[in-house]
Length: 282
Image (cartoon, rainbow, N blue to C red):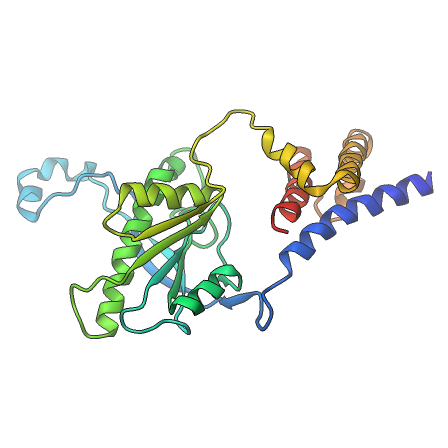
């Protein structure tokens, strides 16, 4: 019994170790982030609420309450060490459905240095510190959509371009902008180029999920192919053992990772995603 439990724990730790190793390797010569200094801008909550002039507001005073001009604080980051000021390009790194805590020291840092680019990265609405509401009720979540996120990026792009112009005491100038994203941010990157071709010179959409597929199992199949037969077998055994342990004593396995408060399905998602991300980011 002890040997079985020890083997189970070892395999489980192996899966999480893969993710930690993949996540912990910055490029040589630097830390994991180029910067974690937070900056803030006022972002519009609903980009599709009608706007009216002051005169029309007076004429339509009885309808003013139906117009939504609320704003929220959107967090973003900038890194200018490689920027060829004042006319060098700007690389916009799109954050997705997670907390965006800085600009990572990865391939974009290499490209920025090579091309003399500024790096900027706005956080996705509702994630990290950029949530418009304290309570995520169904009513409050109605402003969370990829369409709203696309317009967030467009507004941010204009806001930051104006801040660059003010910094260099000029007006009406546009730096060359390029957008980058992976997975869901990859889809946003592709859609941004399609929706706002006048705001960007190009887009890199890595693994961009531009077409929704219900019950998409090919992703997991590719994880198995990329991991190789031995690693795939180990991951499958981890999944089987965790399923069995959750059915008999869910508290003990989650306690190993101080995850007692997680529901069983959330814990399984955490385990599966840790392994998948480790393989996909190698």
